[in-house]
Amino acid sequence: LGILWQLDRATGAFIRATDLGYQNIVQVNPQTGKVTYLPGMIPRVGVEVAMCPSTSGFKSWRAMAFNPQTNALYIPLTLNCERAIFGAGPQRVVGGGGSGSVGRTNYKHPESEGNLGEFLAMDIRTGRVLWRQRTPSPSNTAALSTAGGLAFGGDWDRHMYAYDAATNFRSGLSNHVSGKRKTVRCDARGNWRRKLVHADHAGTGSGNSTPEFREYAAGVCAAVGKTQEGPEK
Image 1 (cartoon, rainbow, N blue to C red):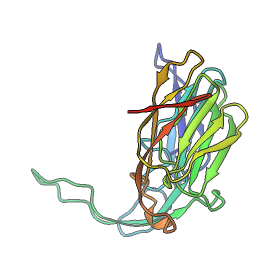
Image 2 (image 1 turned 135 degrees about the vertical axis):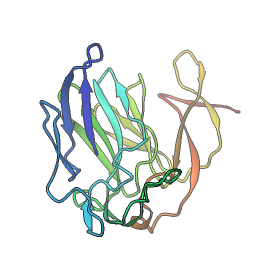
Image 3 (image 1 turned 30 degrees about the horizontal axis):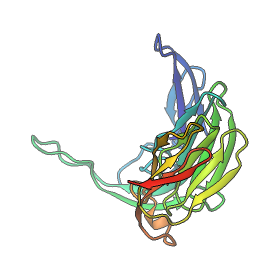
Image 4 (image 1 turned 120 degrees about the vertical axis):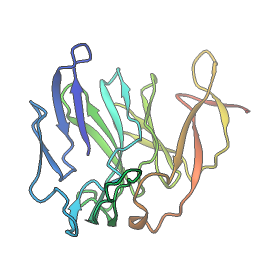
């Protein structure tokens, strides 16, 4: 849903909820964490509902990263919505199960300016959005943050991007990369390290809203900081 929940790690006490403002399904009280459905957003059988995000979610399983130098979270998002008509659920019989049927049409979020991908930096103390970068195709990698002040992200179209974690400057590291794995030198002492980010189409749930992008699966290798190629592994 694009909501950050913060709890005290020692006591479990609720601290704050921060809603990015993209979802249209629930209302969240940021002080108490109480959640209530917005009017008309509880699905009914046979009645179309337009919801953001789609059932694939804004963030889903794509992991965000934290950088203690900037005290910020770096969050890969897919700005997708859907128009859905839910059918009746399965019969409740012993040995049965399932989730029922749904007719689904995906579309881009109205505030996305025609894009599907977003890479966002959020101040973890206040929940304030520090910066965001959008891409035509969905974000579909985990975020990676480094001690060198960089943040990495990738998209469905097999691009990989390096961002200045503080200033939002973006540099495209690779374009339509292959899955070839290489070792890279990434620190001043010359230690060989490997940083891998996977960029492909899986799990975005955005296929019929991105007909211009072919479906690929490829691995991307990122060199962190000042780099020098090492021997292939």
